[in-house]
Image (cartoon, rainbow, N blue to C red; front, side):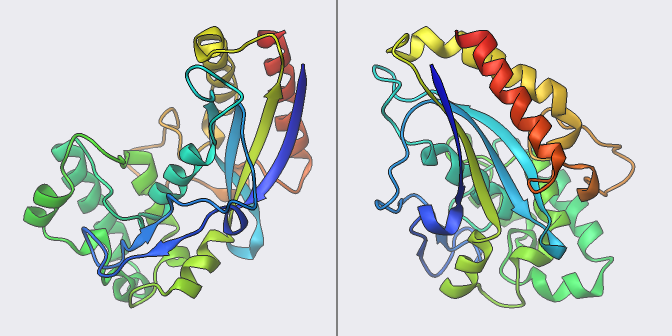
Length: 264
């Protein structure tokens, strides 16, 4: 069994399509479902998403798994998962939904309370999901199926609002600059021991669960991440795993060890 790690910048592996007007709000005009065919990415493994914060500090924000296709785990493209995390981290993708009406309204109001405390953010609200009325949110966003927002993803976007929004609709050039802030890290597993997804499903979940359990306080977009509900501040970037420091070396070592422990 071989485990190959590789880092991909989102700008190089996706072909963003801008569709105006955006929906359900004007700035939600991004479609990331097309991939750059010059990059062939297949097979199953563990992945992480990182964001270059202010001062260009590249921090891990999410961890997940990709299990290939049902009948052939060496097929399939993990970008079919990765684009969803970038879509919901920025809240710029078209047709984002939230099945819980209660949480949708609660979290929008919570975010607005935070954003309106900063005069710099007020002008950025134009065209965003946060500028929709309650009736518009219920009509356009509160649906069960489709690409779903979560509490931690909305809070993540709110904290990083100024990285993704302008006082007008993002242009194609500006969308490309946003994509450059995201890296996708992939630990691809290559083994002849398994063929079908059913053969690795249980083990891959154990690997993912174990890694998240170790780092749950450092993965602000994962559902397992918890914060003090009394304080809006979602996370401290300085506490996250920095891709360019020794904290990433330990993170990488734990992922490699757990993959080997559960799949060999």
